[in-house]
Image (cartoon, rainbow, N blue to C red; front, side, top):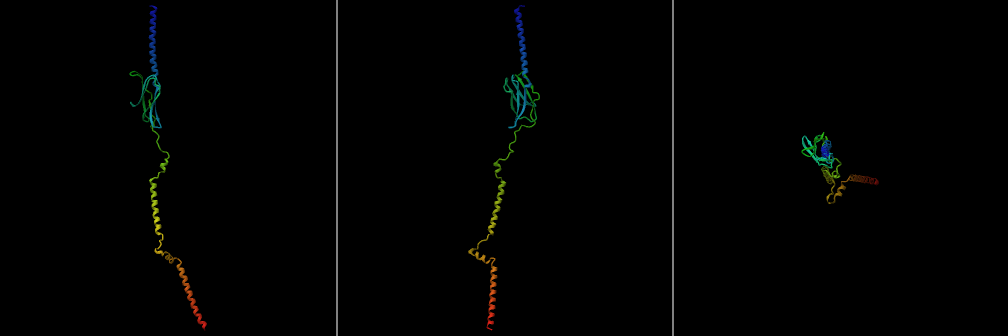
Length: 225
């Protein structure tokens, strides 16, 4: 065998071995890059808005991947990552059920031969409490509400005005009325409390006058004798 032929056979053998090694390294590299541990999901809740969601993470940037969240085989959320994607986590809104454990399934690579077609171990479990927004209100009432009169106050104020009106009417009825023709002064004079006293003094004067006349008459005959 000539040297040239042996050299050609050796070069060919080296080329075949190199190609086989490159193929093996490529397959091994793809398998190592698409590890199920690179994928995860987490349930999150925005307490301000009450909106629930799944945060799905893909740390492998070498292969396109589709991540699906299932509830007893029913798809409830899904998202897709492109090859060489820049984002690690995608937020997928979903109203999950409190305390429910969901299955997270990953398909990485290209159909029909996926590099990865597997469930994430443990899946994802929603919190035990529901995701709801805080209740509004419960603070101090607004000034406009507290200052507004209530129907009870206005209703209670009405009887007060009604009660005072008859009292004024009674006072006006019992007030003395002047007699017609200007005779009220004469009536008040004759019916005053001094009438008895005046009558008593007049009677005393009459008796005193009568006694004086009687004694004067008796003294005259005595003087003549």
